[in-house]
Image 1 (tube, rainbow, N blue to C red):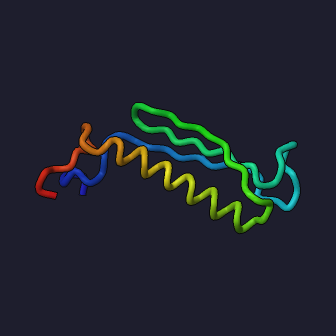
Image 2 (cartoon, one colour):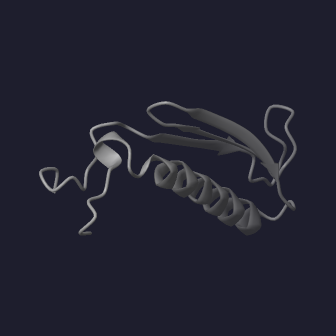
Length: 88
C-alpha cells in the first residue's frame, strides 16, 4: 500500500482528553473536552462542551475529532505524499 501512495510518509496525530463524568476532573466540568490534531505543517487545538451525559460526551468528542481530522487530511490532498493521481 505504501508503494501505491496510500500510506503517507508524514504523520498526523490526534489527542482527546476531558471529563466524561460522572464527577468533575481536576476542576473541569463534566462535558468539557479538549481535542488536538497535529499534521505535518499545522497544529489545531480546540475545546468543546457537551451536555453532561457520558454517552453524548464520548460520541460528540469522537465525531468532532474525526471530522476535524478529515478536514485537515483533505486539505493536504494534492500536496506531497498525500497527492492523488488524476486516474484515481
